[in-house]
Image (cartoon, rainbow, N blue to C red; front, side, top):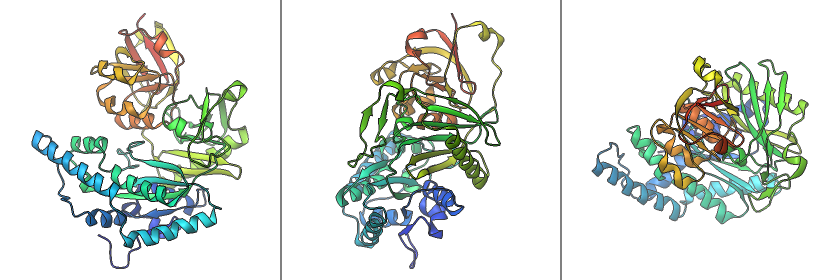
Length: 435
């Protein structure tokens, strides 16, 4: 519970926002970037203590449920359903609601009524070995009080979702062992967005970019532009992606996320020029220096310039030299997730309903590397997808779990034969199969 003088809601510029155990690493790491002068959006934090106050107000059993026997699993599921429903349905207590609405209205006044973003900042996510990338909730483009408050409650409830409960029980833990902070910001009117890796196996920095908001990259829906920079920040190469749609786009849909189909030259046009890529590379390098380790970032760019949205530890592994037998077989190139070398039977899947075909040790070959695949990552030897890039949420989860993945592989589901013995090099970004 909170101390007698502890604030439950405070701005990103407050020193309290730097306390990862108070606001969660997502919010705390971002506040740290702003503290050293890197560009971040306006915003404020709802502390994990606020979550605990709201949770206590439900009057439910909060005993941590651990273990994997049937009785304990059933008890944990029933507890999670009750708590999730309580967090979603019960009004926010006045102790939290009053300062929350005051902070939100002040932010709207400062940003001329820009739509609101509400993002989870769990105490367990964005830590080394525990990124939970894309597993919690973010809500974009909220423009009224009711939706804003609902989004806050939904972020709290996400800690008790089935996928988080399953993950924690597999690690002998419970959502009752931790808490949820929340980050509230104005939506960036993004002309372009993307991610960045401060270190690759080749010792370079890597940036990705697409038009509009970054969710198209995070969800693995496009092949983003790819920019390689030297460790010192010199631009080495720029490779245009295949960006056939944008989310939000540069027109900044007032009502939230809006998808716009793209065609013609803009699909292949680079989102960043050389000067912008070098500038963003400089921010990426400073983020790495601040955290004292390789990092992965998310960013957006509006008419005023870049805004960093997230910074988390980056998991990388050294490249593995493939067995010589593979070098004579057909290959396809794509964007590497950054870890591992794996071999297995290719299982070509064209729809999520076919995921049950994927067996232990298979190489999953699919079109979209979206969050739905996270539930089968633990049983595959590798993943190949036609869309997606090195900074997608699924790529982050693959790095964390040491699973080789190559994304943005054109026509992979048509060219890689189902059932063929296949090798995935998640560092070099190469897929080969036995002819």
